[in-house]
Length: 489
Image (cartoon, rainbow, N blue to C red):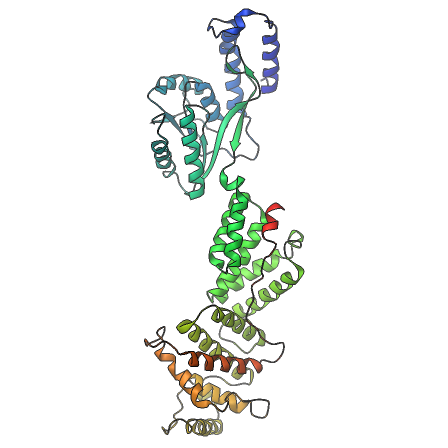
């Protein structure tokens, strides 16, 4: 079988043999010898080649569905059907949808004749000049497809309004991401023959039109980058996923994972963050990632990934200092960005976890039964001395200590090793701790006062001092100031 290039060269030799001065070349007489030879010999040869090895870009997979406009030149539509990878009836399903107008319906028998009886066409009547109805028809067809479908939408034939409407619909569906991979195609040629007023046989080829999501990807990069720098990591994660899906560039997979890591930390999902951190830490070892982050940012991120993995593996064991550092830095980070009831609750929880870590590191737990009788009595006396400043009620130790009991026990454990947990204003701290249950996010409807939050934050600062050096600061996500430059790498 000839190749398309060989067929094209043979046609050119044949065409040249008629001579440029032949006056019969200027018309479109169906009886012209070239037209007759084209229809009898060359067009069938073109069809056979396209049926066996269509000239489409090598990166294109055969479609599972294709949608085609039909104008007054069914030859182009036939090649587009074959170029999309249509398989014969009985093979793996490939649905071929033909959009035709009332005027072009008469071309359907020719199209069926070109393709042969082995191909089944699904026909749809559309207006030739109503883009809205054309869009609705295409969307109705596309939404029938299962997720994971590969759909080619062909705009070769038909009126300009039809082609414009179909292309606009296709690109809009790409943006909606309805679950089907949608590509816009058309059949072009490198040599148009003026005598037969058709592409010279063998010069036809398939073209894929890039949609706005690919050609205007910098806009998507700016949007995703802005979302990330504004601290909306969950939304940024989704934006980078779309960028990676549309461009297949690994840099956006990297930023998707970075955004996902911070999104999970922001949601206090330490186990989920640990899983992402493991994948991300491995990816950062790849040579191609070396230039994507500033060295300082890269090292800071690696340190955060390490702490997150430790925190995710800790469970209820908080003795490890790195685990405590990871959790308190995240809680402090989240508390900075909010106010009122949520801020008070985050700070209170931070104090709880820091206290439990310091107790566990000194061999204590939050359960009264784990204390020796002597230590229980000592704790009770210490609590009575503290409470004597604010109330006269007798002290009773519960089986599981509350935060105030834990703080008192920690204060005893730290005596002689540095500053105590309580300062001279025990009464204010007691009131701040007691206000927890009135928080609208717990059991009450009373917003915490600024003084309450100030007392709780002071307590967290004192507890952090006992973690030792280096100083534990709120987590700081990497800035990613080179994000925009990476769109061009």
